[in-house]
Length: 122
Image (cartoon, rainbow, N blue to C red; front, side, top):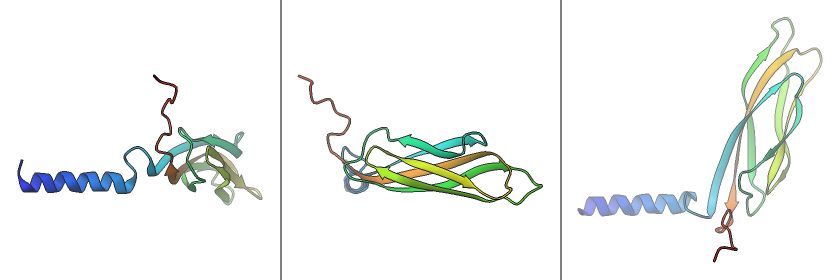
């Protein structure tokens, strides 16, 4: 193997360790929630694997379908953030008519090196 290939392999390994792509470390999980006008409000999101500490969570509007006869007013945010999940809340006010909305989210934090492993295996 050439020096270049060894250097490239070392760089890839260093990036994987730095970004948490290996077991444990700083990692991110993301997802999307689709809501209708009947399901706006609080929506519980549960992480696939719990974080070791409370993660940083960001939410953003990904898409929406609203009436063009009224002003569109919507707010999306994360609340009650915990190691195993959070509440995604979407709010409208006044005379807004909203049919559907998609909210994307990303949670980044530390994961336990043993998260998701079965410790009872022999």
